[in-house]
Image (tube, rainbow, N blue to C red; front, side):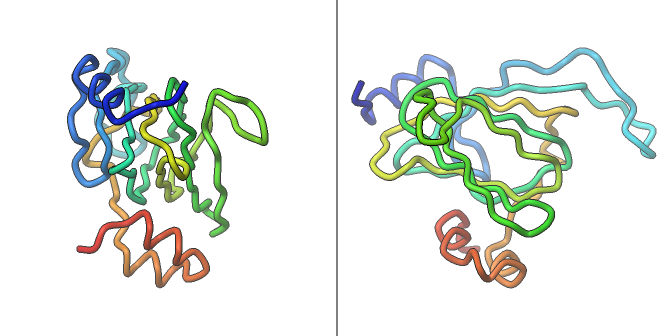
Amino acid sequence: MKTSKKDAELLIEKLGLKPLPLEGGYFRETYRSDRKMAESGLGSQKSVSTCIYFLLSSDTFSAFHRLPSDEIWHFYAGDPVELFVINQDGKLQVNILSASLIDGTAPQAVVHGGCWQAACLAEGGSFALLGCTVAPAFDFADYEHGKRDELLFSYPTYSKEILKLTRSE
């Protein structure tokens, strides 16, 4: 099925998605666990997990960011997505998320806490509907936005990807 910008607009409306600040794309939280867990050393309580719908369109991308929690990406519909992860050892891994299950693609990928991550549609794509599950739960206070200059300094080998998936500040 050929996807279109109109399909993306329809999904944004039907699912009640809103622009995701800083990171990019569109989202809506669909689940936040009522179960709480103590945060290590902080004495505060945090939900066990959260889940969102996340949509990338041809004019958006998920900018480099990192979270302290693990995040699982789920592919639901649309065009393939390139998920870039700079692991804690400094190596870049590119996961292709799609429903086709050919040529090394998969409908899920895990990004471990503390790793830089960013995502965009594969070349020529119109949109992709994804889900992201974060455990322990996502909190905007935990979100660390990747600063272009700092990432370029730390990972000069990946300058092409960093320039593509960060915003000038």
